[in-house]
Image (cartoon, rainbow, N blue to C red; front, side):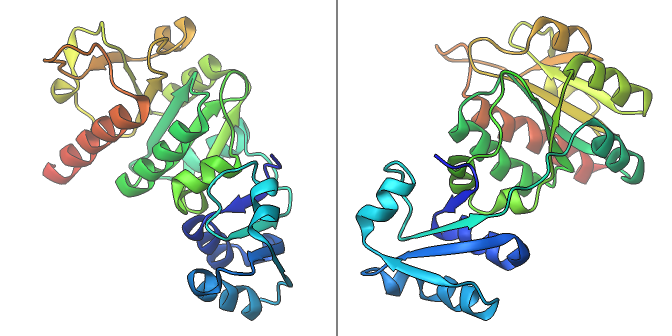
Length: 245
């Protein structure tokens, strides 16, 4: 699937509302006008030409994903990397980063975007290798959060963690074998929360470059949580501590 295609009502609406200058084309299901009428009005307002097509055309464009009757194409956007990330960190007070290592499932990344947006995360950071980037599926699951949370892909995650530490960011890794519960860690300052994928977790070098490792209490039979579920819990512990402070 073309990664520059955005589909689904919430993700398309967010893209058109916040970055209309990036929208190149739009396709709308010709029998689904009631659902898409608000977005069609937005597209017409910013001068985007709309093509009305059968549902099967949209199905083919998004390889059977749930497009909800609308697809748009956006221009190729530049990738943000280490230099842009460091610039953001230097300009941000109470920096709050979510770093995802080894997360390859676009649905998980999309859900993490929603969590990050809701929790007020400054940015999401992933390595370029062995991690999913922003795709149409990520945008669909994120329901518009991709338009609000900056996303950075870095070449060497371990090196990036070291630089973030030098800039005053406390790097907190999450691992089931950690001795410390997240509730016992001070997360009120500039913090980067590092999450690994379910099962494999963080890579060794990533783990070794964290300032501390924390975990959630697991009182049942399962040994781990899905990364998107776990990220929501960890992120909101940061929010809770900051509100309490």
